Length: 124
Image (tube, rainbow, N blue to C red; front, top):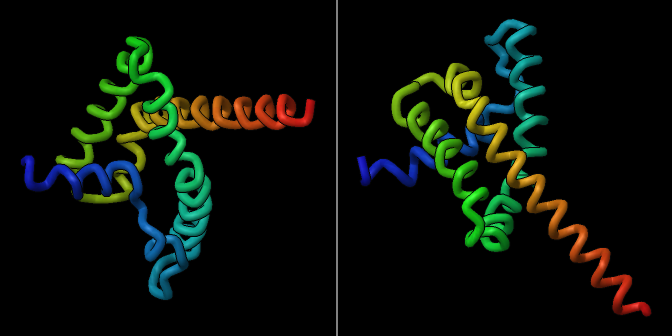
């Protein structure tokens, strides 16, 4: 399992991948709409998820961060290891993934507030 952990993290956090976002010529129109909407959602999440690293860097000493982060990541990882279908994985990982995205958004808000305060202080 340790050998497959990097790929499981990649699949768990970043699937569906960009090559799966565009309509497929043989798929029904409804499924193509799901693919495009899922791609738009993942594009936004690709922009937000790096701030999860920033949040971890800012709050790594706070127990509340770890109480949220570890069970949510474990939830996503269990399904990344066990669910072979990406469509099902997207649905099953949702509860844990929302917590990780919320931590990333909190990190984004932290970075934005520090940036705005830093600019305001610099101008004064």
